[in-house]
Amino acid sequence: MAYGGFGGGMNMNAIMQQARKMQEQMQKAQEELKNAEVVGKAGGEMVVVTMNGEKEIKSIKLDKTAVDPDDIEMLEDLIIVAIKDASNKADELKNSKLGGFGGLGGLM
Picture (spheres, rainbow, N blue to C red):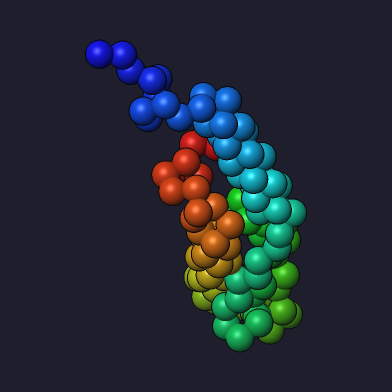
């Protein structure tokens, strides 16, 4: 009994070509994530954190009213909340860009 190769005769060149195309699409999606910006907010807009889709923080903006020398803990909490908000948005963006690649999105 002779076997026709992978998948009952599937063309290996076609499989490799499809894999290359998928890799190019994933690289493009990852580049889009690197260039995308998401914004997290806390306390209305007392603290605004901007990060890219790879969760690299690009900026933190503080409203003057958020800076109370007698209540530094509140400001620290607002910063944490804004970072978490931006991080959740970055996760959503990543899932929308790389979700079609299944488990492969986590490999790159």
